[in-house]
Length: 184
Image (cartoon, rainbow, N blue to C red):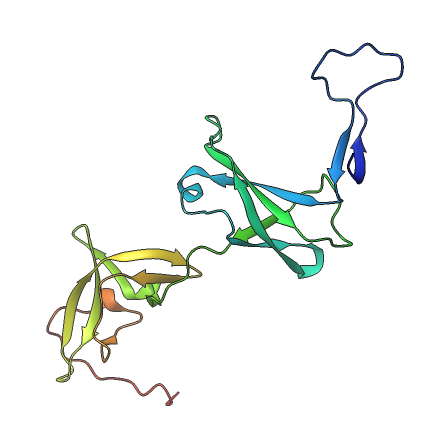
């Protein structure tokens, strides 16, 4: 015995069923879950218990937690299923389409605008300005890109002044004038 809501009745009255045939589908205790289809390369970064934010209509969001991660990936779509438990909410109905995001491991990071990173000779660089106002080309390793920002994995000095735009027009050793950000 259990309590819940019957969401489907595939059995018909008078039909002869085989063992293992589904007769009823029950939402146990009224619990709903989000079955998120996640790319295989991202799937490895998720863990049971991680937080998820699910988008609802009107820009509202609710939070959930990863309950289970499917052990297989679909070969045709290269996605795996992640099961996220959802709280009771008036706008949630079984079978509706949802989208959301997962909170991956948070960590401190140095970030710069994407426009500050240059690609030259197969490597990535930022243009810094030293105390004598000379441009110095600094090779960097980059990480995650998001919202027009890029994570800089190579530690930059705390006092580094980086050209945030127009670095492609600069060369190593150029003398520059630093503009006052308060002056229009």
